[in-house]
Image 1 (cartoon, rainbow, N blue to C red):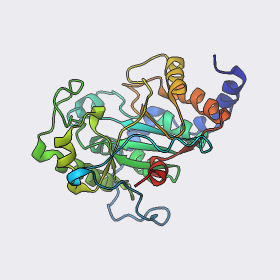
Image 2 (image 1 turned 90 degrees about the vertical axis):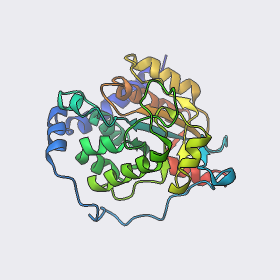
Image 3 (image 1 turned 120 degrees about the horizontal axis):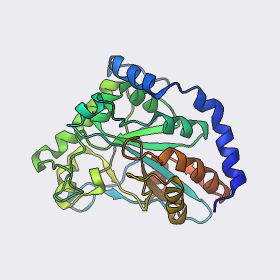
Image 4 (image 1 turned 135 degrees about the vertical axis):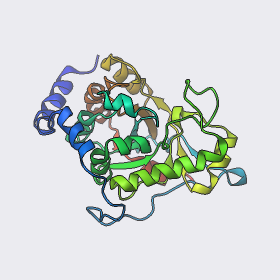
Length: 286
């Protein structure tokens, strides 16, 4: 059992920050009501140098990154969150289903946890204010999770599929959606929907310049309701250089925010330092 004192302290530290977040319904209403920012809008701070990427694979194929160096003396870990929304889920969002999770983002901010958010273009269109806020916060980085959240292979968790000639356009459409929402510097990192890819998909995206980012620790938060079980799964799997996959979708991952309140203080107690994916890639052999 995770040490109760640390968990209580972490929860207490969240109080002021979370109370300032506003009601979720108000956040959703504001997000939908606000017009998208211009793609030319100035970022809050100067854009950094181009983030590191991996060299192309054999035949120029898109490279794939799973985890950073396993350096015992540099216990880094990257928490990543998939902000999923498929291209045809607009009516469900309009009916009240929550594909965002503002409380999770507020908790990460309160705990000062850097993170990488893999966002679909459709999610950015539905929640432009949140997308812009995440994208302009130096604590986070936004990466590409496709526009449609349709699969790039057959037989991928029942997801609809993207035809090979349309794969590159699907990635580029997501970046266009980020720009329209006011995200100033989306990273050249791509996560395949469902994590499903093959050589055909890697070849199709070769011209985009992205590095595909997978993971080595599955958070198990998708459709989970037991936050303690999610926390245990993450804590049992993390090693130096790990990439943890979790979700930023209230309807599909309702326990994630509560799990984070346990995961973060416990990993810090173990000597881990939280980083973004870009830092892990920067440290990887290339």
